[in-house]
Amino acid sequence: MTPEEHIDKITGSRKTGFKVPEGYFEQFYASMPSKLPKRQEPPKVEMTTWQRIKPYVYLAAMFAGIWCMMKMFHMMSHDDISLDNPPTEVVAALNESPESFEEIVPEYAMSDFELEDSVSQQYESFDELSEDLGLELEPEYAAIDVTKTSKEKPHHREVAQAVRKKQ
Image 1 (cartoon, rainbow, N blue to C red):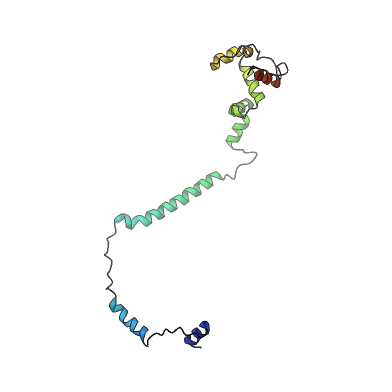
Image 2: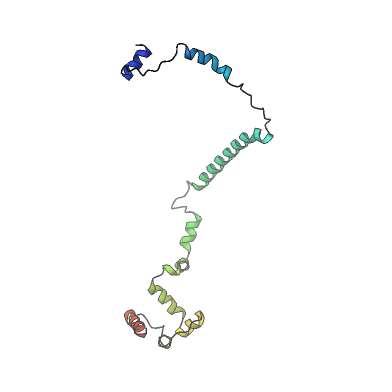
């Protein structure tokens, strides 16, 4: 099957009414190079020293980075750690007293009751608390004894109701 027959088969033997003149493409290929302008060679630019050695510097930096990564991975993976030979940080943490861990816990992580107990242990009365914090307490709160245990203290609902009544 010739290319023309194949094209006719695809298009359904429809004639479009357009024809290519005989020898058009042969003339086109022969005349086109003479119509184009001459190709100019780009000017030759002399490379600087940095441009010449830059690939080698980058290659050396890459290998130095790989060496540093391998060194870090080697330092981080110790095969000699076991329960018989724990790392020094673990031993130091186990030997610390439990009270030292309480210093690490921030106050906002404490529950209200823990915070209340902590404040009641630090201050004997509201007068000391108000002096330390620079506050003026209202007379009804200034008379409350903070050294009472939580069972002796008024229930929180009662305190909240007293505050609401005042408002």
